[in-house]
Length: 336
Ligand code: ASN
Ligand code: ZN
Picture 1 (cartoon, rainbow, N blue to C red):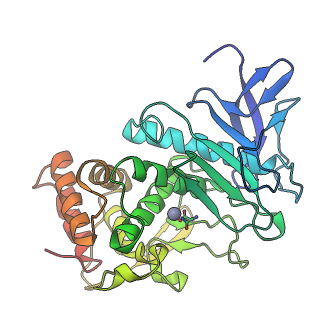
Picture 2 (picture 1 turned 120 degrees about the horizontal axis):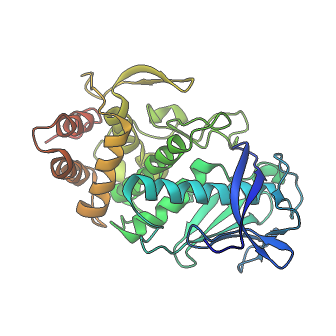
Picture 3 (picture 1 turned 30 degrees about the vertical axis):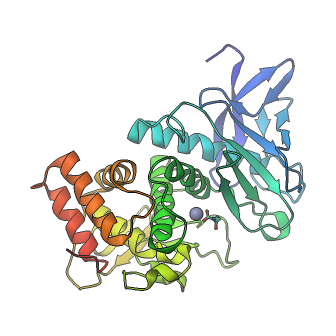
């Protein structure tokens, strides 16, 4: 770290009060994280193109903790910068991966995209993340699980490069949900405890329900719990369901369970109970499968083989982890 790196106080919307790295330039603090590949956070101020304006501040206390509808509001920037920080640290600490492309280079984030925009997205061509402000411009899509989901699309593009349609598209989406859950558990806080829900903080449905549920994906009304022939023709955010479900089963096992105050109930496709191997091992297996064994055309059957190969490489073919992978895939209707 150079000597002009400062520790900022961020009043985030979704993660409480957080520390961020900023750079002091003259008498102005810039929202640049020089400890994490110089990740920068920019304001599009309701625009839809270009890089926008780097966020700056006079006193290094950022945001209010409640996003206002102002196009210059810092709170969305605090959450976006914090999400990038948490995601960087998750990949570094969990997989020794330094940045999205494992080359130490940070991406950048753009907030206040358009007006009333209810989405967030990763774009490989700019190597950047973009966040809308949500309906009414008062609940930006900047929760840390959404940030980690989007950045993980960059990791997938840099590794297996799973094609974003058909079964590989569902696996691409699930990979982002899986690592989002990993990042959220890694940074678990009172304000945002780790969970197997996706987007539970951003009130995207208007009734406080999450976007997706990994224990039983069908709870969202569109996702599938298990594989079936033809799943490749539904939306990738729904065909992700079986892989999310497999990851939950592999981590936590089937049946009812409460974690950090959230109740889960994860039935298997065949009714056969599955024992979990723990989230840490499940994350290592999925990451190795993604980065070593999957290709752009990997489908569900091939994801099973890739995960078994990863379990063998990491833990051995007679390990409980290997058996766990076989059982969790059987639990979503994917067998030998
Ligand atoms: N937020 C969405 C996602 O990451 C954007 C998209 O549909 N690609 O999946
Ligand atoms: Zn996605």
